[in-house]
Each structure stands twice: as C-alpha cells, then as structure tokens.
Amino acid sequence: MEPTRADVCAAAVADAFADDGEVFASPMGTMPMLGVRLAKLTSNPDLVISDGESVFLAGVPPLFAQGDVVEGWIPFRRVFDVVAHGTRHVMMGATQVDRHGNQNISAIGPFDRPRLQLLGSRGAPGNTVNNRTSYWVPRHSPRVFVEAVDIVSGVGPRRAAEAGPAAARFNDIHRIVTDLAVLDVGGPDRTVRLRSVHPGTTVAEVQEATGFDLGDLADVPTTREPTTEELVVITEVLDPRGIRFKEVPPS
Amino acid sequence: MSKGPRDKQTTIEDVVASLEDGMTIGIGGWGPRRKPMALVRAIYRSDLTDLTIVSWGGADVGLLARAGKIRRLVYAFVSLDTVPLEPNFQRARQQGTIPEVVELDEGMFQTGLRAAAQRLPFLPVRAGLGSDVLVNQPWIETVTSPYDEGFGHEELVAVPALRLDVALVHLNRADAHGNATYLGPDPYFDDLFAMAAERTYLSVEQVVDTAGLTVDTPVQRLLLSRMLVTGVVETPHGAHFTDCRPDYARDERFQKAYAAAAGGSDEEWQAFHDRFLAGDEAAYQAAVAAYGEES
Image (tube, rainbow over all chains, first blue to last red; front, side):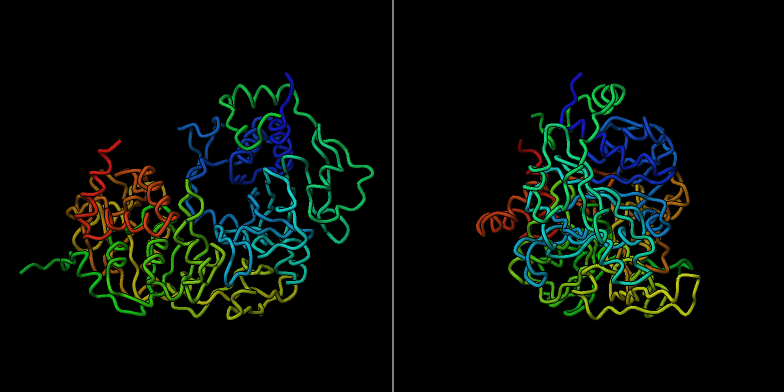
C-alpha cells in the first residue's frame, strides 16, 4: 500500500499528539481530526476526543460518523474551563503564520478597515497563552507563511515573552503541519523552523513556498511515511470515503 | 386572585417596542445555534438605531449589520459554521459601516459577561495577553496580581464587565413565568447573558405549564429561573434558520440561500429581503414554509 500525501499529513498530525498523555485533543478541521483519531488508535490511546460539539467520545468513530459511546460532557463553557486549566492540545487553522509563530484568523489588512474580514480571533489568543497549540495549513504558500501577520490572533513565543511571564508561562506552540512539511518554533530566538519535508517534496520547494527565510536547511530530514498499521487505520477505519483528499488531493 | 408568580407572556412586537435607540443588547446562543432570530428579525425591521450588540455572532450580527443597526459590535467571531464566513458581517467590516468594533477572544468575552453577572468592574484572565486584541482595544487594561505564587506578580488582562441593558435568548421550553429549559446538546451561555443584563426577554419554541417543564426532562436542563426573566414570547421556529435541536436542526438549504443573497449583489439581497424579511414573523414563517416546499 503506497501512502498518499494526505496519509503522510495524517501521520504527521498524529505525531504532534503522540506525547501529550491524557489531555483533550481538540482538532479544528478534517485533517486535524483524522490525525488526532489516528494518534488515539495508535500512539496515544489516552487522548480525550470529542464529537466536535458537546460530548467526549469513548470510542474512535470514522470522520463525521454519528453515534458512539459517550464518556463526558464538554459544552462550550467547559471548553473554556479546560483551556484555562491547560489540559488541552488544540490544532487550529491559520490564514497567516509568521516567522515568530504568530497566527492570524481575524482579518487581512488593517483592523479598522480590513480588505478581507475572516472569522475574528475566536479562541486563538486564549488558546496560545493557556494550552498547547498547533496549526494545520492545507496549502503551504507565501500568502500563508508571511514575514509578519496582519493581526496577531494566536500568540507566538516572542510576543508571549514580550507580554511578560503571565503570557509566556503556558505558551506552547508545538507543531505546524502543512501539505508540504512539518515545522515548529525551535529556530533561533524561537522562530519558525523546518523540522521535515514530506516525501516527494524538497527543502527548496518548501523555502520557495514560505514568505520568510527558514534559515539553515542543510540537514532537514524527510517526514516519516505512515506505517502499514496506520495506513490500514486511515483507509479502512477512519476515512474509507476519502474525505481527506478534499483537503490534500492525491498527486 | 391567583397567588402564583405573574404571567410574563408578551409578544415580539411588545418586546421590540420596549427597546430604545443606543441600548446595549446581548444576544444568546452561539454562532448559528439557538439564536433568538424571531426577536432579531423584529429589530432588523424596526426603527431602532445606534445599538451596541454583544454576541458570539452568527446571522444575528449579519442581519443587524446589514440593516445598519449597529453602532458598536462586541464579538469574538461571526460565523455560520457550514458557511465559515458571514457575508453580511464581512461586507459591513470591509465597507467600514460599524463605527466601533470590539473584537475579543472567546474566553475574554465570557469573562466580561461573568464580571457583569457578578457586579464586578472587571475579572482577570490570561487570554488576550500578547495578542492584537489588546493592541486594537487599547482601552482594555491589564492588572498586576497582588500575589506572587512563584512566578512574580503576574500581569493579567482586566476584562471589563460587559454590562447589558437587555439580553435576548431563545430556549426550547418555558412556563409563563420565565422558567426555561434547553433540550439540545449545549446550554451555551444564555444564563450568563441573563445575569449580565438589566432585563432578559426569552423566546421559546413552546410555553408549557410549570410541571410540564420537568415531566420528561431532567431538572438540570432548567437553565433559566424566572427571577432573571422579564418577558416570555412563544415563537415556534423562532430560532430558524439556526440550530434548535431537538425541535429542529439548522436549515442548511435556507442558510445557503441567505449567504448567497448576503454575499451577492444589492438586487439579490433586496429580493431576499422582500421575500422573507419585509413582513412580520408570521409572514417570515409562511415564506420559509413555501420555500421549503420548493425543491
């Protein structure tokens, strides 16, 4: 069984949650949900997952499937409590991410009169100073990876440090998984760094698709391919209908 | 002469007639879920103006923005979920038609309502630190903790109380006195909106007698006590086109039509307005029923 790019992405998302222990894994969107459920069925069975609405699921249903054994109640008011408590790892989307790991989902252009109004900052400011936060970017491009985001919704390590210990104490930007690569904020001065490039992609292509300098790219490894077990779980259990290919088409 | 608590049943028209220009109005529900849309539609077609709207927003914000009702908007997001970006809200922001825009983090928003509900001037929270929420809202201050728990005297966001003149919420069942149950998956924050407000108007799918509220429903689903409620309006399908399970799910087909009209030309919006929004609530529901029969 030959893994597709989407399968590689799912395994990379799963790896982001592998060492979390018993926390609420909170995925926003299809690929984060697939990766979280893959992690729960392989590397981290202790993860707590939800139906994306208001209950914790004891089992691990396929994407967008209805009904399963429920193990808890997580209405929005309790989500905010868990965010503040810190026992959560959220993987959000990002319209922009910059060199310093700041994220924008609020608007493009000046706040007073944006060229393009997006969602608003949602929970990104609170997530990023309270619990572990990762990002999923389905189309890695210079429009997403910019020198400086227009509006800081999600707070990167530098901004958190500048805001003081209360902001930096629980700031934990963990991984940025894209359709081309895996990145983190482990670069010089906690800047964005390239951890690995997906099979079939080169570091030059990733740098080309990134609007800021990724620094020294001499020893960047290739993202691991999913194991046979993971491929079976993805294709037979979690996503037999191939919903993941809407986000990351097979090449 | 009855010795029971008073009957608070009223009408959509009387609720809206009690509102005034310039008021701060909180709208319950969440995004495209269990919004008091019948009351929102009535404000949309009213003469009210210069409102401050406080909402985890969906089409409630979109409609009121399109009608030019909003002087100040307090929100953390505006979304229709299956249509991620609300076209009427986008249009208002991109054209600059909302004079004061207060974008908060979701948790800050809840904290502001909590402060108002507890009659405090502010409550501290971590959310917002380091983000542009504080840059774009320079009137929101920080506060230094008087305590050192080993991390220094932490500087936290002092979220100001989000005091509401009026809260509008929609639940599944209520009695005539204002005790009310939610029957769906999530209470959202309707009780908090009510406690943050001077007056709360409650619309419901069905008014039942008090005993009927718990006859087949756990007492924990009683979200609102009558002591928080000023008026009760029975508005069947009053949350349409937002989600109001188990009574009805979100009307995705209608929502798509709304979003297409809102994001379309002025003529397309005018046609949507004329067909659905120009008349009263009964006319709206009749037009929606007719639309539902087309396929």
